Image 1 (spheres, rainbow, N blue to C red):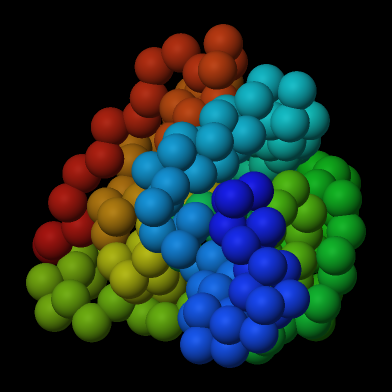
Image 2 (cartoon, one colour):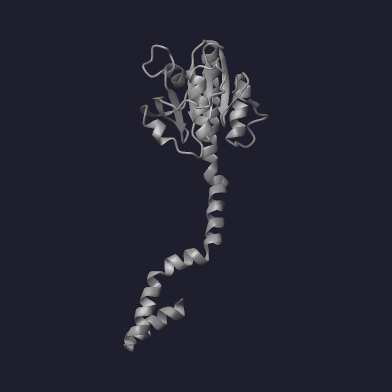
Amino acid sequence: LLFLGVFYFLSSYFELFTVHWILEHFFDYLFIIVIVLFQDDLRRALAFVGKNPFISTKTEQLDRIVVEEVAKAAVQMAHDRMGALIVIERETGLKNFIDTGAKLDASVRSELLYSIFIPSSPIHDGAVIIKDGKISAAGCFLPLTKNPNVDKAFGTRHRAAIGLTEDTDAVVVLVSEEAGAAYLVKGGRISSKLSEDELSNSLAVILELTDFGRGSASFKGVDG
């Protein structure tokens, strides 16, 4: 590159216009050429940055808090026979669904989650969506499953949780007021009833939190 730089200035000095033009355009595209030639090395470097513990530690700590607060709220709501849908965004963006609700951008706290789903709350019928460790929105509308074989006993919340997870990689915490129980829904499948520890451990496994989750919920089909 140093040689090309020197040659570039010499071509200008000696009025070698064709050579100068070629080199000038070469430097214009040099950045793109470097990316193409060294794309594998750049990909490895970016992957290293993404896995760097100094960068990911803060995010994982935030995810741990989210898991614990969501599990605590869900089990309390199940005990009090309150229905709820709590969605945790993963790789698939949920902006279209977030835009249907009331924007909050609030820290995830069990007390706040509980208050959102109190029957007198104007947004208790929709879903809470958690994005990047924060409650992004509440009162969100989710798509109902189109699976004709879904158990007829499932209500709207069940069908919404199943519908969203059929089309995205999101995980949904479902609280059934009729059953007084908390469940996880993932990939269009629903877990058995979960305790607070089982719920937090299963979420930790799904979210790939290290040194946290032990064991995971088993998921069953939703056919009647």
